[in-house]
Image (tube, rainbow, N blue to C red; front, top):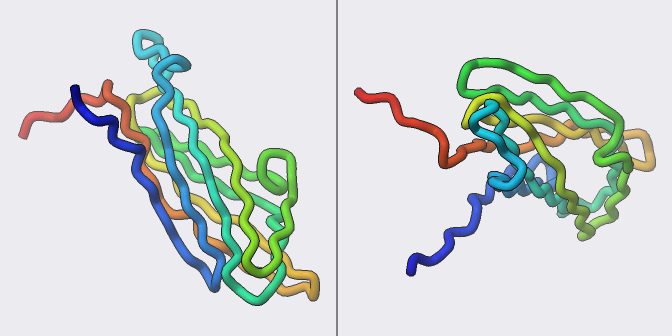
Length: 138
């Protein structure tokens, strides 16, 4: 019996703010026959700087294998604007539906400090790969 491989982990650091993302294909939520492929992704934001930051906005770019693009902008994350002091972490899980069996996501978080400084933290580019993806013969 084969060992289950954990989903890949993607990581990016911007000026002391570390962002980790772990996407996971959701078999039970997907309907390949209806071109519906669903992923969850867990994001962890860790403040390794000496500054206190608040996540005030998010900006996501999602591109599926057919080249269809989605832009998702909004305040905070999952309805919250978490504040992270030095050494603190915040994590959440969200989801992304695609109409193709694979794609990529990337984005940024806008952060603000107590003293009015701003930081645009890069979310690592991560792939959304389902077992329904078919390889193109070369």
